[in-house]
Amino acid sequence: MPDRFSETLYRWVPAIGSLRGYSTSMFRRDFFAGITVAAVAVPQAIAYAKIFGMPAEMGLYTAIVMTTVGAMLDSSRQLINGPTNAISIAMLSALASIDGDERRRSAAILMALMVGLIQTAISLGRFGDLSRFISKAVIVGFTLGASILLLMDQLKNLFGLQVATDPHDHFLVRFWKTISASDGIHTPTLCVALATLAIALAIRWINRRFSVWLPEFLIALVAVSVGLYWIDPSGGSNIKLTESVPRKLPWFSLPVWDLTMVRELSGSALAIAFLGVLEAMAMAKSIAAKTGEKLDMNQQCLSEGLANTVGSFFNCFPGSGSLTRTYINHSSGAATQWSGVISAAGVAATILLFAPFASYIPRPALAAILVLTAFRMTEVAALKYIVKATRFDAWILAITALSAILVSVEFCILIGVALSFALYIPKAAKISLTELAVTTDRVIREVQPDDPRCSLVRIYNLEGELFFGSSPDFENLIESIQQQVEPSWKVIILRLKRARNPDSVCMQILEQFIRRMHAQGVTVMLSGVDQEILKVLANVGILELTGASNVFREESEIWASTIQALKAAYALLGSQRCKHCPNHPGQLGASDWSYMI
Image 1 (cartoon, rainbow, N blue to C red):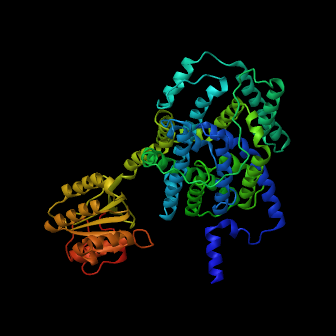
Image 2: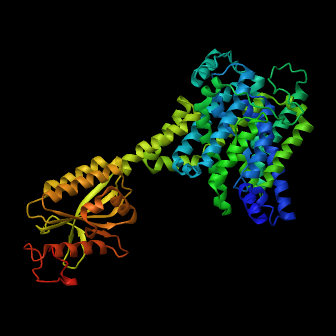
């Protein structure tokens, strides 16, 4: 009993399972990786909260609570959960029509609860693997659209533009009003932003040049904040600063359950829930490809759901798997999920020790970091590859990216997925029918124009998906056979070896064809029938209609099933032969199956 309990605990809480065989060296790796991630998480959490107008401490709380819960439950050993750029951009769009700082804050917390419950339901329904239907083109298109939105949104903070727009306006309308109504660039603000960019890029160059890792964002923020305070201690330059962060850890608080707000947020919550699952799974798969780790996608989905749900009771907004922090965690040598717990502890320690200093961080400095993030979000190599690959992928990428800008970022993935299916179904619905012949050297192949045709037996090869999408084409192909039928025909063999996924619509078309052929005195035989098709044939009564002796199961040797059907056809014909058939009395030998030529 204890062993069963332990195994269950290890399965549902993988972080505890990772303690089996945990060593001092593994702890050392987790500790340094966690502290390194915390150094990046602090400025990122503040910046991501600012994307959609949340207090800085909410971003930090999300980086503590969600990261801790996610780390304990993650299937991936290196994934770091918490506030992310993509989710924050989606929240910017989702909360655009909600007025008032307090109401927006309540809506963000409620959104975390709704997103968490949806993700948990996805996991419990075992739908985690559905993420495979979201193509790379959709992901890259979403990333491109989100990065453009982030860049456009931060221009006001980068240049110090005055914002005087209606929050109910579409993002592009708000952007245009801000640009057109501005009195011009605020030079001190732009200088702070450029200084932040320069320092961050310089640190990045040092990291690459000397193969070291220094927290570029953290160093840039600290350097610019100290420099600005030293140059302008009185604040006469009118550069906007971040508000102060209270020196207290997340506290338990029930989300405000407002039915009106729930209805208003439900569509966005569904989209953000799927976006969060997608983002986390993409990160987990990316790291697993490098480590060889086996992932449980439903467990990963459960981790995202419970992390968001628990976070909503501790004043957190929605989050997911972080691209930057996960990459840093892996690069820093993290061994287990406990590096995420240590990272969260590092953020908590930062709040307790350095919270008062957050009010010295200039907003244009955070904007500069977000602009850098926007540029790095775009996967240029993947973008070029997809655009060059096929027009199908290029269209999906372009429309997904445009819908992020023109519609909303939280719905662009759903639009991209819907478009993928809309473009894919016609491809999947393609079905073909070819007439076959047996040559003198006993090779079955497609009939050539100069081949003699048997007046008694015909063979047709059906290839494609037998689902409702292909039913119009399937019906046309079946009708083409019916139009060829002559009074001398006795047997039609339909080879179904390459037919797949039959449904009721196509089966009904097949049944009607068989009944019409029977009415004309033609026997229909089915060859190459696999287990799935056989089961459907039995379920809908076609097996009984044709007779089990006229249905031939697929065999390992190519054409073997069709040859068996030909033997049965000749046995049925008895002594009847056309001028192209071998006129042998009695049983035909193995060498006689070149009956058409």
